[in-house]
Image (cartoon, rainbow over all chains, first blue to last red; front, top):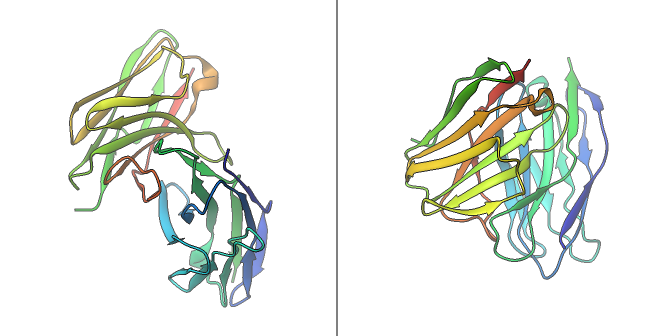
Length: 113
Length: 115
């Protein structure tokens, strides 16, 4: 079945540093790919998504490109802010139209002033 | 209104108590979900309702009992829980059963502690 592997954290960066969080997937076909973010004390919210190969999802300065050659969907941001401190989850649908999302293990990002 | 509202935000209960978690959305979404999240872990799917019918039960123990009274409401009834059930319980909704769409709207969760 479909699966996702995400780099382990925590990741600690200084403000304005460049961020990369790695995510690779295994899937049947070419499912949509997602990044969700969870701020402290909150539920998850969709950060960005890509629905087909070579698509680039972007939102709030974050970007991720759906790369089928490397089966990757790495999250990047050119200049992080303290307010970006959160847990980031890569996700894709389970195989079959089940309504189930498979989440990566999550990467905690801490940005220091 | 793009919110999923969960109540209560915090709940402490003993192992013999009966309590309920509530979730509400007014986005016209026809799929609703319960997830359980332990600290520093990803959410784990428990139940999926599609058009008010239970469509997925991820082998959840019977001490958790979901209910979908109408298209806007989702409840999770709790009875005889164990300390290991302590976790953040998240409700989510989507326009329809997610399938390839995957855009879920999450509530802020209920932090449950079982003593």
